[in-house]
Image 1 (cartoon, one colour):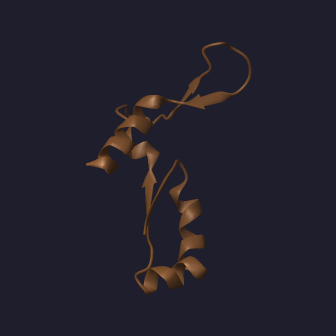
Image 2 (cartoon, helix red, strand yellow; image 1 turned 30 degrees about the vertical axis):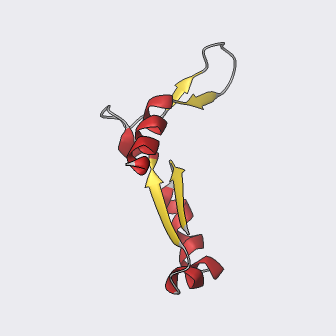
Length: 76
């Protein structure tokens, strides 16, 4: 089984997969975990992945362009 995780904090997710039951499953070849940094799929110098809401108000949302590029590369 292949598990692909898209995140903006890949360093935070590496350790659970290196020291848990998932690590044993990976060692046995039952699971392969691939962590993808969403910032690698941006096209600006600042690696920005978040944007302001169009309706206003507090909070931020993820930009669709980096997500689309990442998913498209995973499908290829």
